[in-house]
Length: 111
Image (cartoon, rainbow, N blue to C red; front, top):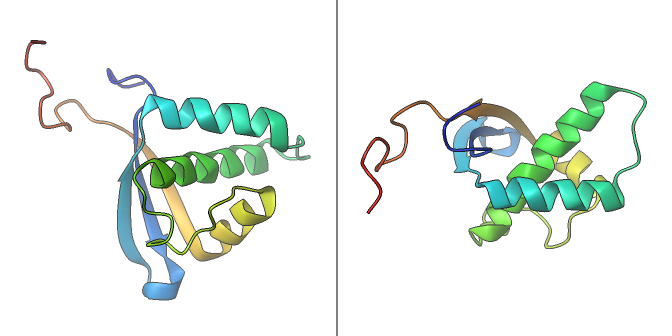
């Protein structure tokens, strides 16, 4: 776990664009919104891996929504399990913890 608390660097590769790399920084609020959405909308899949994958995609979706980039990524305005599965058909996602010093102000004292 990073010092930034549930903030992640999500690396995405778009299969419709030659697997071009795109990145999105998630914030703790994105994780909170994803968790609340998942509790209301996702039935437990038979596989823990499927649940984890869907949650990763949902976290990326919430981060993109917060930044106003859903349309740019070709994603729908409403999140559903079907939308997550369609997103998984188009994008690969790799979730990375933020490394020490990854943010511009990392290591500077609070003001």
